[in-house]
Image (cartoon, rainbow, N blue to C red; front, side):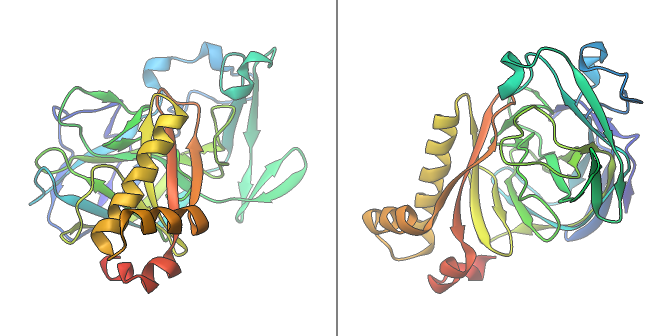
Length: 298
């Protein structure tokens, strides 16, 4: 089933009008707009001239039949196709370098055959989904903000071949996604990756064998607990403690043993440090988790 980008929202909300309802498991293609909703037409268009109430549109929401609060939704990302050109912006007061950048600059970045053309360089792309989430049970949350519902996690691991697990907070989950990047580094330090529209093919099912409080992403090489908070320190704290709690549930390790394993073979990683809440993750090697018997769940 094809979900057109004409059906998009700017907030994730339990009150959003549903685009369609699907049985699970289901295969869907989401067409998405870029994070600027096409407002950037050329390198003459600057950040300060944009309409910010049109930032980070997410295509959806889709009602997932049979999903109840507390259920975990598994979204398997089968493919991401990105449009060309992509857009990048660096500007004063935007991102980590915003206090030393003196003037706004926009770059249009052609993308061809798996490469982005950046100032004469051909650099391999790594398409990923910046915004993916379900409706929160409480107040509406702008699509540009990450939290327990997912949202603007800007986590580069959410890419082709990975699975993002989202704990549903409302009936039907109400899944939306957008803000594709052809490439983005950990941190997204100027506030943009290579921003693109495109299409995402996903397979969605209910994961009956796990319970989560925060999103979890599984790649071919790692299992990563994702958390967002007002500070990066707090996000790291939540993600780390989430991973420790999962090891206690999924293995026969004690807390001390889980902590030592994480300290020696796990990784604290930054997803993004530019959104209203910061996002971090704690990753454990998937082959190690399989040796512990965890691979059965994934």
